[in-house]
Length: 451
Image (cartoon, rainbow, N blue to C red; front, top):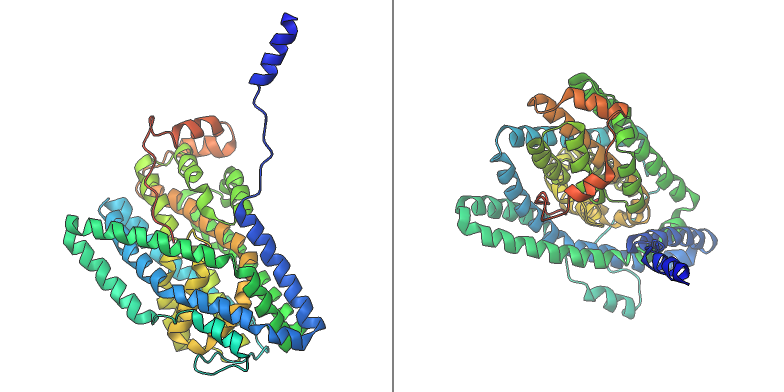
């Protein structure tokens, strides 16, 4: 009897493993995939019905446009503050920011080069977007679309944000409460944006149905071409550019580093966001042998300013939309778009929909007639989010090793022992040492704005 009671008590004390539930973002991802497939089927089988669903895509685009101004203002103001803060750390902060700017610009340029080589979206010849033209819709549709507020001009907003950011820097301690308030405002803005993104399946369904109904199978081939080209470009960027830099500067193989970060890649792939792996990257880079000060500055700053995958996505998607609308951008327009994206992409990390809003902002600022083509990107944006997140994450991991090497704050022997497997990473130690406030203060997390 006593033995039975002991066994019962032991069973009661044994924790029961609960079945892991899907994160809400997974349901959104699945819904977008289903919506894209259904939209393509409707467009192929019932072309006229598909074209009549265009207002669904237009309404979603108007909601995204509504958020462009607040997103750009909040992220640029906070971004300038973050740059100033990182620069005060000294040599490491200045070196990190310089490297991030160069690599982001390089990634944007690669996106432009690949986009000009493959000409994604060419031949679709969709109707240009004209905000002043009244569509042939019934009064109910006009009324519903008219409820959504108009957009705020992007370039004046960008200028105002830059001036406010530098003014807050000059105010010093007096400006800290205002900067904090802008941070709260950004949290509110992105909460609204996340809510809007739950309508992405509806917008994607309407946009894809309308495009396929108007152009047929060619639209599906064009979108597939863009996705494949983007994945190949990201893979080559990681292996050739980042891998080459890592080998030349630190003597480390990119494949060995990626194998070491294998669990983080699985986490990112399952969540479509590199933000989920931020604490683990900090812990693993310290275990690899990079000093804590270098990791503490480089990783959080890189999550806001070193977005190689997002940069490639923004330029390739812009060229895709321009070609699809039958109005390809000339070299001057592409260069000015690249300069705008260098600044605006600094707020496109971590939150679903921020990259889409930045893309819409760039097109609205340089070629408003192309904005209607963003509806096609809505349908395939989620398919490219994993490649963006994985490229961003790898770029920050490589940057940490490179900067640690440049400032001589990395233990080469430790790097070899860790990557060879002789000194494996202790998952339990990582959990205990990071995220336990009573043992060690958690590294400050930047305010993130895509993924």
